[in-house]
Length: 129
Image 1 (cartoon, helix red, strand yellow):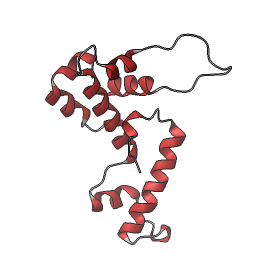
Image 2: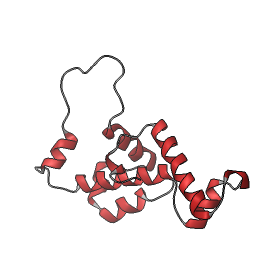
Image 3: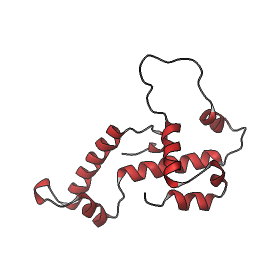
Image 4: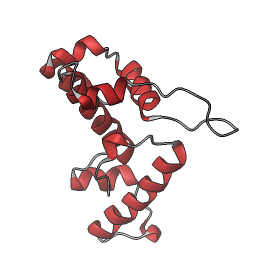
């Protein structure tokens, strides 16, 4: 369900829809219905799975750290750091993947320099919010 989720610019509506679908699957796997009234956190704990929002955040940070550790001349890194010039269509622009990753890095106190130390990056990335 989250294949390639590290590169999605995820909005609140997307997270809510994914959480709802994920909890439906978790309930089905536990053999529990809505009428049973068990909280989702308890069901996820039974199965040992994390919340979809947390998994998406960790996935994006893992990919971002991977890209930052690549050589500065690598085409993937150039694409991530490249800014698009010109104006787009009217209205407010949508969230970009870069904005989402920057917010996630700020929430966990990570900087670009931290990505060089892979073990530090992974440890801070996996800390729960």
